[in-house]
Length: 455
Ligand code: NAD
Image (cartoon, rainbow, N blue to C red; front, side, top):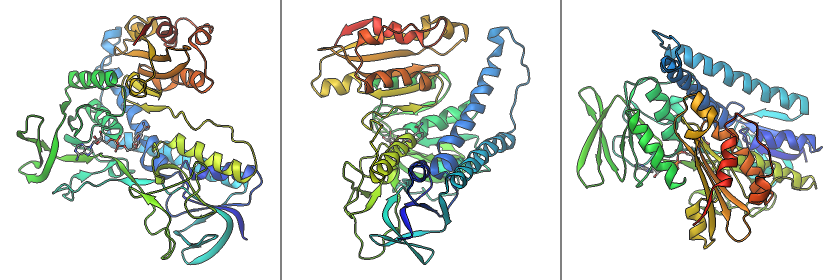
């Protein structure tokens, strides 16, 4: 065999697994047909966060008057913002290349096809390995909406390209995570934004109160939101495009735009990966895997967005990849894969881990819920933060923390504390043993744990 492990795809599932695999002494190759870093680094998490950071800074500068600061004539240069985003992305990509060199991971540039259980063809050249790990990720779903191929209709891939795309009026189809983050970016840049969501609420997978608060906040910022709405077609209009949709009353409505973002989910991507005759088991177009991430073909593993039932988050893919290589190297699995924090980087930030109150109820688990608004938090008040809340869900029986939902400043960092408590089965009493520094945003965690009510 040429290698112990061939990894296909160098996104956060693949490149993190590759580095760990090499560190554990496995002879490792990574095959990547595009740029190192995959969707997360090149067309996903990182460029979005760079744009969101710029957008947030702009909003904060524009509201600086409330702090007694004078920041007249604040503006932005769209192309310069893109360049700044690209510099960060390039630097991170270079970091992966350096990591591969340092850890002696063989990086093969080309398109991989699995031709036999131990053989991968890279642009026609065969290499072999004891095991193969697929980490080929996902691609945006293109729903069968008439007019979706018109110029001006884009996915997150185009908005996050090095040049980016600017629009005066953006209609976003899908009020999920991608939809919300782009609504925040374009609204902060002063663009007109309309969100059309098929479900009865935004971020349908999140806690209901988060969805409601977010909708209120976005409306206050001037974003139009249509819920329970079905997009019928997109057509050319005098000044760009017109998105025709049926609203919740069944009436036909029209949202005008010069740009339409389709953000209705991502599909597992493994197009052309398996040679004819190799047919792994699939479900809903994704690879079915065992609890150890082995596909139905022995010795072929898969992690991340490409697998059925995946949460489609970069950090979940990385953790899964590490667990696969630890198992292959005969090392203990050190990460608990059952709890994956999920974050939305709008303002205020949203973060969630474990069960919501509604999920606990559906599972028949009586809970105590501790909730505090962050309005009364000194740090939030001083920094003029948007109103938010912290909610902690404890199992009533033994007061073990089983879930946390945060919508407040720094929520995406604060979630680390409840995540640590949940993974380690800590009780409310143990959670409250910790002294948290004053004044900080984190104090609200203590407050929430103190103020529990039976549900
Ligand atoms: P999503 O599943 O989060 O949201 C898609 C939304 O589109 C849903 O609310 C759905 O009800 C709606 N929808 C579907 N079809 C529709 C239609 N025809 N008309 C109107 N609405 C429709 O998907 P996404 O936002 O595209 O994100 C894809 C994946 O990427 C998600 O799994 C997400 O978690 C991940 N992601 C994560 C982050 C992050 O962690 N911050 C950021 C971006 C993306």
